[in-house]
Length: 554
Image (cartoon, rainbow, N blue to C red):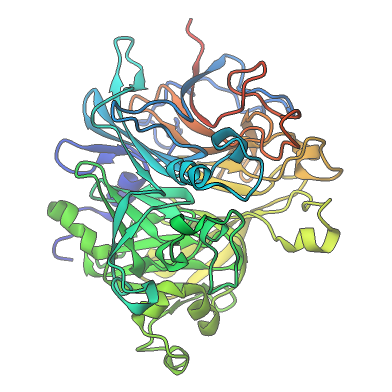
């Protein structure tokens, strides 16, 4: 295993918790790390002495936290990032911290979509060119400097000359991998804009990955026959094939890459692991009903000393799709799949029409496989299966699937991320009894506890038997994975009306939990009937915002 300088356990601890990225750098990806009896060296002041009783169910327009905790809004949609006029985007989703000194670093935030009336004043399309430009400008991502203040708390530095934006309007990104410059992307090597940015991940070399998810809502998608829900005016239209990728962000050099080798679909996030022979593996879910789970394995080995040169690992390798019935990873490689060759697929077409290739090769349709995370010790892969959309079709739009969803668990043969075979089971099923409904983001509290956010539809008046009627507003759950309470969700916090929690992340001192609150007031009936005015209250428009949860002083 020449060149592999990390043990498998060290690598998993790196991609999940505070760990060395490169000389002078440390990463704290979206993980909540708490004290575990089996891991006494890991301490989390935020959670010391906290009981494991659920907070109350709430349908109020407020952020509910456990007794002895408080929440502070750190930054909200529209806040100024730098003197150049860049502003914090809307629908903040994934966030990750990368510390480049004892008291300074970065926080990266994805911006998935927009609340139209907040950003444009319009409640529905069509949009003027200026309104559409405002929408695209509010998507993408924000890179924000963070620093430790005099009170020892970490805070965003606003404004700051190094803060910058990735957006859907005018950012320029380089396409890499087999589809770059091919006819399948209309000959493009450089493309404009990144939109629908949902979950993400931190690479072993310290850059950030951002997943372009429901791109079809803006650009449509010829492969799936999708028409856009919010069409762009002619002047702003772009090929749908330029969207739907994992975007890598080099924070220091402000460079952006769309890695086509990782496939084109509704990317929720990306989770890294090493194979036993030292290559880089990346797990990804396609957040769409009846779509698949994927794994990418690089051709070459990961070498820690190579730093950002390891980026090439994401441009050359093999993309696999999971066949759950057979427990097999199926290579989406025309060289070994006659069915792909017969249908006219080369590597470039696989990279762009990934869903079609997966269907041809026997990929198993799943109920919206969203966030995928690797257990920091065992290497097991946990998958959020959000819900079958068929629940709506069978019961009509007035029914949203009682407590639908599940947490799946995949175990590679011999614990090797490079294996072609795996075992699969359901760890927690959504139900009234379990208290789990429509799981979305996953992250590890510690090796014994999984943190889960929910994302189910909410209405101004809860619908009978819907998750909202049963469990109130969307919330943040802590689920033990071992012991007498294994698989029993504990409600840790509740979001305001219409909102969902996204991507909880612990500060480097583990004294605060930062979490995004996305789209409060979603599905409000009209301008006189907002269901939320969070975070400012009164008659203020609702705004997505990042908050810090902490213990009350004293």
